[in-house]
Length: 386
Image 1 (cartoon, helix red, strand yellow):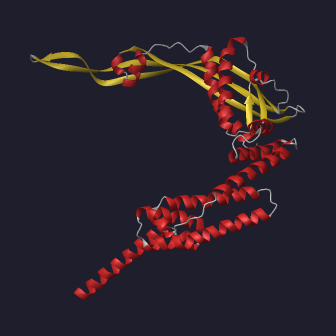
Image 2 (tube, rainbow, N blue to C red):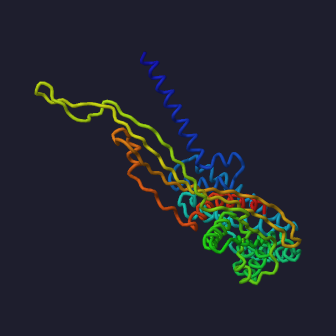
């Protein structure tokens, strides 16, 4: 029995040891090494050596992976240098940065530096590659921008961003970034809805909040919504689209009143006392009341037409309608008869007085709230394709 128990314990310890070893290998770079991801294996193993400098399997991973990672990086650099690909210098920059990062990580780990005492560094080569990459991206950006299309302007914008990343402030790249972004951006002028003067304040409130939220929710740098004032301030002469808002129909303040009358009664209600044989007793009776529940509703509703028009040919690209309704209500009660026949809810209603409705301007804003939510979602979806 003792022998069997000992074997079982040994098996458990062996299993735990295997699990721990596998977990350790998984975080030491061994898996990356097995997959041929030598750069990742180097970075992972060096980080592991900070915490566990004496782990033999981690040391072996670093010793094996580092020369292979250097060989792969140098091979990529040489191949890119010998070729004529448009991104040749981008490849070279990436590989030089990897080589330098591996060296930097090793220099900051005593155990790693002991294992790899002379890691390769390529700072001068990286500077030269960045300068060449900046020049190449700048030239490609200029060529793309000259195509004069929105699609190529977006390509040019990315090239100019790359240029500034490699060499900040390269030539006039900051101006080119602004120029290409403007050319790459779909410019939409959003016309405010025309409403009667007595509702203009509320319509303006709706419009200002709507364009602000639509601008936020388009979530793309290549679409910009302008008010007519903003477009005029920027002296814009070439918008791409107009978005026209029109409250085709709306009604504010339609009053509807209903009165629901219910006959109520309650049995065994104490209504007084009686004396029998000199003793006083409660007297009971059925009490009745007629309760009326008054409901006053003020309904406001409307429809907003949204039309998107191509500014170059006045063609309607898309047209949608959005509906909104708001119901304001006031509830109170009245009764005749004995209030002891009423239930608790009816007594509460009876304490209330008819409320004054909000001003029409506020009712206008309330019925536009569901329209506001629908339109912002629609605009976000529509312009996601751009």
